[in-house]
Each structure stands twice: as C-alpha cells, then as structure tokens.
Image 1 (tube, rainbow, N blue to C red):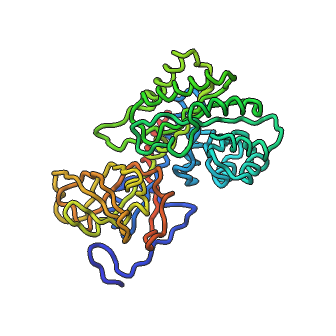
Image 2: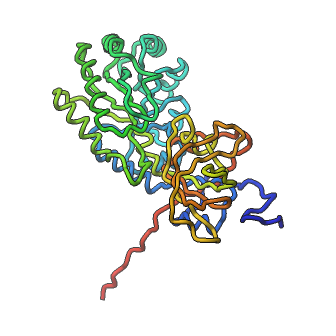
Image 3: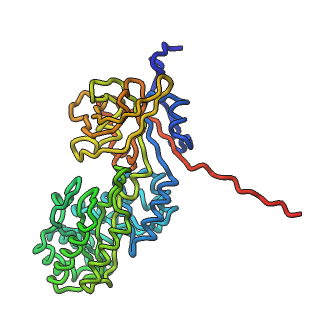
Length: 408
C-alpha cells in the first residue's frame, strides 16, 4: 500500500474504465467526498440533455440541427435522439459517418463551407447526404464537378453578418459578403432542387436582437438576388447559462425575434432551420477538478485549457459557474472572492482569467465543480504534457418509485 497524503495515494495509476458503460451517480458532491478523485472527473447528464432537446424541438418552428462538433460523444447523440432531434449539422465526413451509424434515418447537413472532394462524393453516395453549404463560387463548382447532374441536391449559401457582441465571431472565417452571397444564390439556383441562406451570428450570443439584425440582412440578400429561396438557416450561437445570477434570455425569446422579423418582411413562409450547439449541450456536462496549489488569487488545478476547459483560456475567455467541495477540515468561508485558474501543463497559455467566485479560504486539496462544460469540453482534451487522465461518470436524476394502490 502506498503512502497516503492529502487524500491521494502516491504511485497510483490512471483509472481504467470500460468505455461502454460509466458509473452512474445522483449526488455529485457526495461522490467527490466518497471517492476523493485524484484525476479530473468528466460528468455527463443524459437527463438534462434529453430535456434540452425537447425544449429546442418543441419551441423552434422548423428543423433543429444539432451541431455535432460541440460534443460528438455517442451518449450525447443518443440522448438528443431520445429527446426528439432528427437533424444533424456535420462538419466532417467522420461526423457524417458517426450520425449515420447511430441513426441511419437521420437527416444530415454537411455544413462546412470548405469540403474535400472525396468527402463530398462519399457523403452523397455512401451516406445519403443531400444538403451542402458553400460560401464561394469555387466551392459551388467543386460540388457540381464531384456530383455531376443530380436532381435532389439542396444547397445553402452561407453569408457573413455584421459582427455582434459574441465570444467568437464566426463570420471572420466563413461567410460570403452580401454582394457575393447574391451572386452565389443566382448561380446555385440552377443546380439544386431547394435553395437556402444560412448565417452564424457567433458563439455565445446574449442579445436576441442580434438574430433580428442577421435575419434582416439575410432577407435583404434574398430579395436582391431575385431568385426563389426556400429556406433560412439562422445557425447557432445560442448561449449557455454561464452566470446563474444573470441568466441569458430563454430560447423562446430568440425564436420570437426571428419570427417577428420574418413577419414584418412578409417572409414567414421560409422554412426555418437552426444549428444549436452550446445552447443545447452545455448544461449536460460538468468537470470536477482538484486544487493542487494556491498562489494568492491563482489556483493551480489538475486540469485546464489543454484538457476539459479549452474555452476558459484565451481562445474565448469564458467563465463558468463553480462550486467548491471540501472533504473534512474546517467549514468553507462564506465569503466568495474572484480567482484565476492555471492548468497542470508547463504552458503559460494554460491559464483562465475567470473571474471564478469561490470561498476565500480555498486551497490545496479542495475540489471544484465547474458547470456548463458539455460543449467544447472533453472533445478538446489533448494528451499534452501527459495530463490526459480523466474519470468519466454520469449524473442521473433520482427516479421516484411509483406507488401501487391495492384494490380490495
């Protein structure tokens, strides 16, 4: 037996798990107190994911396409299918293969504006993909060259929209400017049975009116093109609840702004699509980390931006809801103060400025539950510096037993 100090055993090896099933728990704080995990713990909440899927699919007056890139874990996909999601936004041929394997009847949209020719061919001929996006004349020509004269192609022209107050501006990399988008609609119309316009306002958008402005810009492009357009894809960008004391607007408010803008322009007949990622999956995941050292307001953790907190670093500088769990010792201070985080690697990029509000007396050996990490968390984990060990569990709701009434 190894030497035990600060609740962990020296010489312990990384946990080995059967990846077909994961331990299921109800009370996360109790799990931490009982197991005192040495390694980061990735938490998935399938019940939460099913509830979010039902919210989106019942609220949105069109097709909800889950953006697979946010979290392609098979348990996530299965939870969304159980919650009513039937359409998927895929950005690579491997994502296409994943969805086709898990749900052969799913409607797959290949929504990366730049695709390999081989991927276009494989998606169409092997996986029944008929829906493709483009934002350039060269990509349109590529699709036409690869597929030839087909009569069931559905194309979307992705346009750039003005920058809004968002965590990451998605029009910086993809999207045709309005003049080019008009030209692309006119060119694409002759090659497809249905034609749509798509945009993305950017990630974690907290202003509902950003969607109203983007929809208006798209409708102006459609009108100027002079061609018949069948559908409007309003993309993703719907936020996670990163600040429970100041929650984002409900999804229904975003939908109301879109519907109002369409109605004012007499375009309510357009078939609507959306591509939620973070807003759909974030609440379904969390991460448990341990404090290894404290220097003032800087907490050194056993996980970081190269692990399950990629977007907490300089890429997006997101902060997350946090809760401290202490095993034994004094009661935590009731005073909450701002902290910064540092991950375990030797890289100075592996830092998160927060602020993360935690008890003033937090220190080595305390654990932190970091919430809303279902999106861009585990999928971004790397083996850099050897810090890739992680324990995976599922947190499920307590099932109440049904009472059976005896009949005399």
